[in-house]
Every structure is written in structure tokens, then in C-alpha cells.
Length: 175
Image (tube, rainbow, N blue to C red; front, side):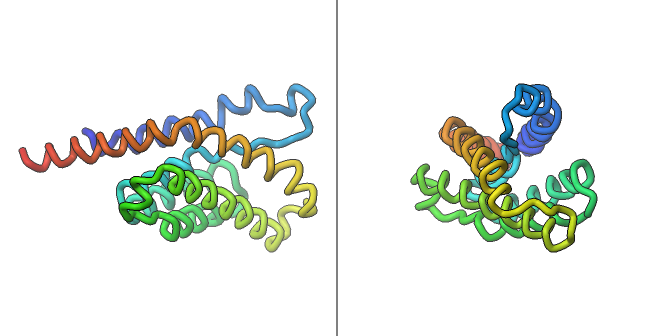
């Protein structure tokens, strides 16, 4: 049962990102900025750091496919991007696990990479005509601030949660 907790949390957060966030979308209140929460991806990166590269990569691909099916007109952009970036940045070495600031910086770097990868793919495929300055000022910076605030608040509880999951799985193995 304990092994499904992470998937359930990620799935509920995926639903929250797509539905509840649109209710409180800034454009409904006249704010010209677009906020894109990447909370699922941030937790996937943390899972990769604290649980291993394979966990981060598999969850990145699974939820990337879900993003592609729900939000994209082209399949594979998020699946490849989230899986590959999670593979590259799921650095599961003790210094990353002990130092929370390094883990936060790694997760933020992953979000920056994902946002620019998706923007680049949309430009390459001709799906968007948004200029870089508009993308940077209207979408990237507000989204980055939102995601940095999220991971700054939830990084410590996430680390404690992953340590707890590891402890429970080790206890289950002993039984």
C-alpha cells in the first residue's frame, strides 16, 4: 500500500493543477500574466533525488504522457521532456539529499529546463508564434516565481515524507 502513496499524491496534484488552478486563474481578474504550475514535476524531481533515478524517470514519463493527452495537441513533448529531464536531474547522491537548498535549486533548474524545452518544441513545430520576450515576461517569470514559492514551502515536508516512505518500505521488506 505504501508504494502507491506517491502515485496518488502526484495524481491528485495533477488534477489540482488542471482544475482548481483554472478557477483562480489570474486572467479572470484582469492580470495579464500566465501562471503555469509545475508542482507535479517538482515532486517528481524530488522523488528522483530521494528515491532514485528510475523512480523519477518512470513517473516523469507517466505524468508526461498524461500532460500530453490532456493539454497538448502533439503527443510526446511532455513525455519525453519530463522523463529525460527527470533522468538527468534525479541526482540521488547523499549531498543532494542532505542539503535541501541544493535539492531545491536542482528542482527549479528542472522546471526552467522543462519550460524552455516545451517552448522551443512549440516554436519548432509551428504551434506557437509567441516571441521570446513575451514568453519570458508574461509566462516564464510568473510561473517560475509560483513554482519557486511552492517548492520553497513544501521542500522540507517532501524530504521528510520521502524519508518516511523509505523507512516504511524497509520495514515491509523485513516482514
